[in-house]
Image (cartoon, rainbow, N blue to C red):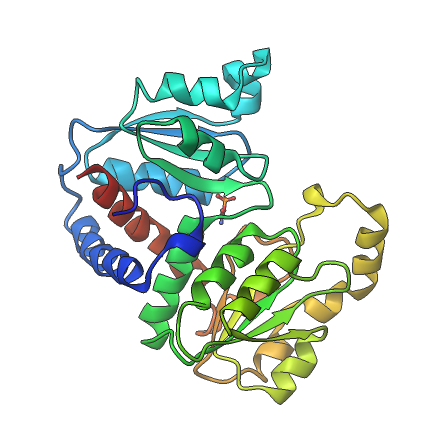
Length: 309
Ligand code: CP
């Protein structure tokens, strides 16, 4: 049994199926108005970086199950981190107040450091440009719900693959399913990091690097288009932003491009989006990113049940 949720490489397909089965049950629990199965438990959300979906969906999940929520958003500003307290000391303190800690940290490795000192479960809610494992679970859950399977799918990961923690976690997870084919669609300079690529190679995952989304749509019958935001706040090279600005249109999902996509394909995005999926696409039946955001509640309820029951 997994004690902390830190990175996706450690997940087995059995674990994922257990989460998905429970998430389906949790959807029914929500439809019936929630239950009190985690009454008496306390969940802390400790967020050092901004969030809408992850923090609120975890808090919604905990609330639907009757748990009490302690929350610190903007922890760099409003927790004692502002006075110089280390992450480790904060975790050693909060573990005395809560049965589980959901942590978003601004630096890669934050969740691993927290898990190292914590006696209560730590859930990584995103650590810098590292990973976002619960996002990937809800992404895969959405794919399975919408397409009925994960094995054998052709999946395009699009955008800022260098800084996007959701695509790192998702690539590791997709690599655990048979015959999945990945297309890594990124502007020059924002390609998937070497660490993820070498994992895919070590595990014989079929992947191809592509630098034109339009060409890919013309040539391949892709099942899942997973778009991501360009993470400007993580750029350390201003030239990269300028280079990207010149080519950004080529990586956008617009209605004319969607018309060329297979009818049975789906378009996902971890959100927030800026303009990389145009608003005009939202009405297309293939656009599933808000369903995906809703699924986050069910998957996170399942994880809370598994770690706290
Ligand atoms: N997908 C995601 O992590 O969104 P938030 O940053 O709003 O939590």
